[in-house]
Image 1 (cartoon, each protein chain N blue to C red):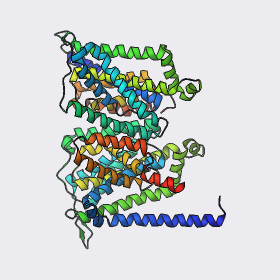
Image 2 (image 1 turned 60 degrees about the vertical axis):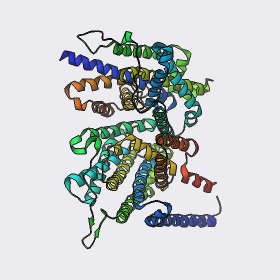
Image 3 (image 1 turned 180 degrees about the vertical axis):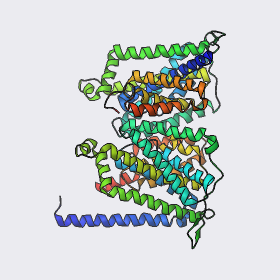
Image 4 (image 1 turned 45 degrees about the vertical axis):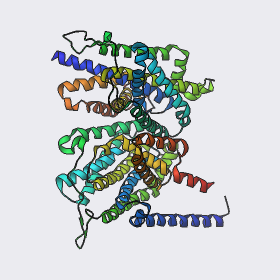
Length: 288
Length: 328
């Protein structure tokens, strides 16, 4: 029983780690630009596919960095050409625009790489099981958790200690004042958007190694990432981090006791949070 | 301002024009089964467009006339679909009861969800509506024994309606069904139109235009948003019930958020500032979708492109552009 609980707990941690990577990117874009990026899950798939293309040439380790960077560049181009134009307009337009982009990226991936799943080769050094007793602790899954911890730590350090990071945090608080102080807000938003997409691309490479690649691979992660943001609280990245881990682990623990409810439990958590604490666990007063 | 005499004449002219437009719309809708074949359409396509148009108009009650964006309205549409389907399948083969079941299930869920979310605003409101929609989708998807799960609910058909003296055979006659749909459409659209012209509707417009000022005037903003959300859910529940009868099938994808996106783009294509715009948008979107998916396997890409083009180049929609030109 203990082993079963631990197994599911660890599973929950892994899935929670993916929610966190995706939700943090979404949350960054949402907080600074007031845009819900429906295409976020499709950027995740794009990141995985780019790694698939790159790995035969440059190997796994460089791809782990380069593929997300390229995904971020694609995101930057889309932001520059389309999304930038709808900043500040009624939210309906950003929703529809990214909704359409999601369809386009998904179908483009299907057209280029096919409907069927593709495997993403991971190096043997990290694919071995680490322990026979705790069979679920494969090297790759520990590696995923490790990379996510590094990425999240790097993101928070960046936001905390660099000039750019401070400007982004200030912009979330009051973009107009930041702009009045002579800071290039357009550039800030573009880089922030690309950063969010970079995280989605990274999640794509990691998820590809775990479950393989297919054009819809991000779909099942997108909605839980929304929930992570709602539960954690709008406007708070730490809240998003907590929210992602919480719903990942809660869903996995539920699997042990009442398997058919594991998909529903995250929505129950969301409903409870909205009833008892409408602004989310760490959400800022006034936003919600 | 122009002198008084001119203004009243202009107002009378505007009122006359409005009646003329309204009469024109109804003539076109009533005559649809006769002119549709001339443009390579067919009667059941007309029924389908009418139903989706009603759904898009219900969404627009909230988006266009209250200024609150729901991106999860397929939930209440889909509950209407399942309400009607389950009534026909499990309880009784009665079309009116199926309609009532769909309206109550969709609207009831809207009342509950609306009460939970009416305090949030803007993009966050949209995000929470999407999340709630997913709950209903999961229930329909997982509750195999009742909803048919992934395969959807089959094994029911719309039933002829008995009026005592005569029977309207909507089961076998597409034409009779079209007129049945049109009557329900007229009633629901009439209710929405009536509400929008009432003081309640004017209050919604005030909230849309300037929420803070409305609040200062003592309007209970959250309450009005909740009411508007609920009304729109009841109306879209009716559309969902009709949709179940169009297809004789309850499909879980009618609850999925892709459909919410489709309904919102229909409203935007037609023009969210106009009452009839979403119906026009539904007609255009349906025909476009039919055409694109018959031409290419990569139809999804081009549907996405339609969304992008509408947002980038025609954000006011067709009737919106027309209105602006007339105003200029």
